[in-house]
Image (tube, rainbow, N blue to C red; front, side, top):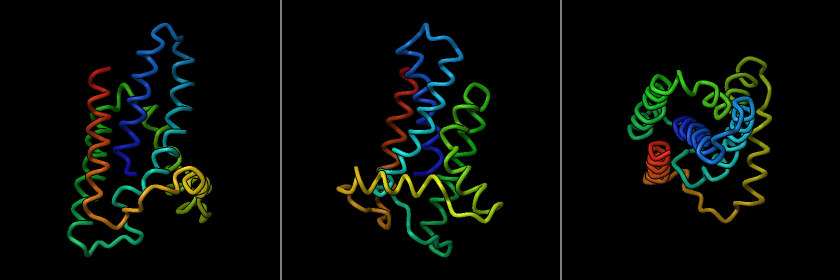
Amino acid sequence: MQSPTHILTGIFLYKLIIALFPTLPTVWLVIITSILAFLSHGLIDAIAVMTYHPYKANWEDKFFKIYHIVFVYILTGVLVIYFLIPYWWVMIFALLPDIIDWYTLRPIWHHDPVIHPKIDLFRDKFFHWLPNLKEERWAVLVEFFLLIGLGIGITLL
């Protein structure tokens, strides 16, 4: 899925852990939330076949371009600015698999991704039954509804 979904999932998990364990020492809160945010990335990416993620980037396609500029880049920027101070560390852990595979290993070290192939194996084993909607434009609604649910959850916690 896209970075806004990972960011909001990490924040939701942090607030959920606080709500469930209000007396948890801060160090344990950070450790548990960091691990859960990191692992949540894999679960979310495993179900990403149900969302709009074309196999090839097509910047000539107006829908693809608008979706990525507005939803991915602008919304990510807004969320980072809005949530940076209280949640910077949980956002990093929620995005860490992408940071490692797509922003470190491939461009800097010219190495194949390490984490995402394992996510693919996990998806093939446990979520093989999900419909593949990656090329369907309307599948952006799946991620939008997930974001709305996360936003409501964050607000209520």
